[in-house]
Each structure stands twice: as structure tokens, then as C-alpha cells.
Length: 104
Image (tube, rainbow, N blue to C red; front, side, top):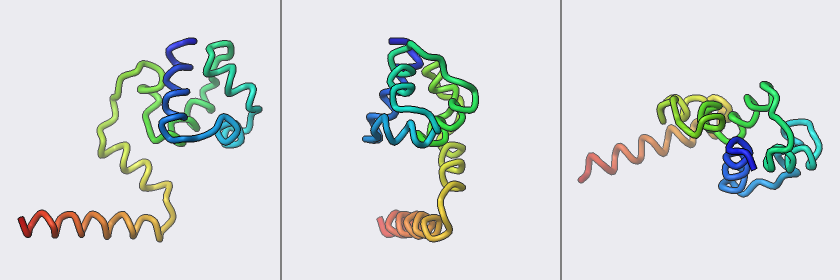
């Protein structure tokens, strides 16, 4: 298995996503995802971008195993993908956490 395939598989399993789900997200067959994870098939640039978005990790992390994006950048990218209600829920959680820290 290639390192890229291993990182993709780990990211997928860490999020408890099936190969079928990832395949549907990418618009490819499940067997293609299995081939990517085993290193028998390469990853196209657009697929890498979609995987990065799906897993909320940078393409650099998938490719190299290192993170060049800061946690704030990764949060911002993920936050932008949420609908307005989910964004508001996250903002409310941030306000709550700040209030709790002020009480300590």
C-alpha cells in the first residue's frame, strides 16, 4: 500500500466513512477507492481536492503526511462548508466556551 493510499484509508476510517460513501462523494466506483487505498490506482488532482474537503485535512497532509495548514485555516475551510444553522451552532458553542473560561 502506498503512503498516500494509507493516509486516505486512515482518514476515511477515522471518520467512520465507508468506501461506498467516499466513492459516491468522488463520483467513482467503490472498487476505485479500494484501488486508491491499496496503491494500485493513482489519485487525480480533482479527487485529491475533494478528499481534502471531505476529510477536512489539507492536500499536503494527504500527500506528504505533514500539515502546512494551521488549525484555524482548516477550521475556516470546514466552517464555510456548513449551512447557516450549523455555522450558528458552532458560533454559539464558541461563545459558551469563552463564557465558561471567564468564570474560572
